[in-house]
Length: 117
Length: 116
Image (cartoon, rainbow over all chains, first blue to last red; front, side, top):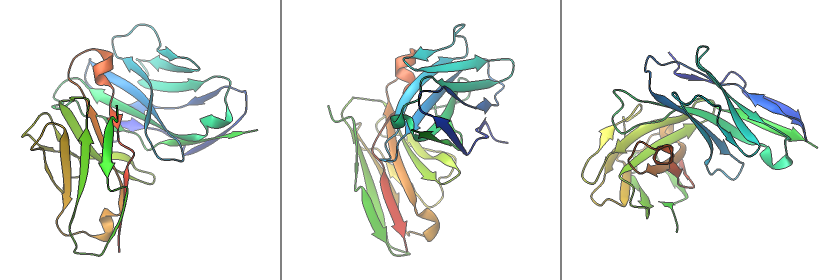
């Protein structure tokens, strides 16, 4: 079973509008972390935002926020005021807390976001 | 501060050839990882290391070997390359600790491998 599911292979958004990228996860751990990474066409992986399972507030980093709904096991990324430079592949990832030697990250399949001028 | 450096960036191999990908980090990180990225499949963990002299298997280890003789280096080897190993390979590292900062992986720029 997929531990991280991103159901939107591709999305379009108009410049300056907000966009939500979906991510659902599956774990029986109480302690875990959720991450979003951006991969532009140049190929590097850029860390965007982190949410711990015990964090009560949704994480925010500039124009990025993570809409964390624990009961629904979702960790959607919200990008406000989209810019052309936001066009990229976005990956959701999870680190489970227990029985996870090395603290490995599990990645979703990715969502390709295209920002239209 | 170079971060995580992968060499080579590109390589074309013939089926059956061998090669080694080198990952070097200068951040004194304990943990290092090798992932492969394939279209529609995200990143999948091949092998990882929790410290110098240690290695462990990830999700897709078959056909690969690794070594971590020095803390700063993590080598990924293909003994007999197959077309199914055509992929983009990413190395990553992170420090230990329970704080959110320690949780963040730092990635290399990737190595694109084509096996003909």
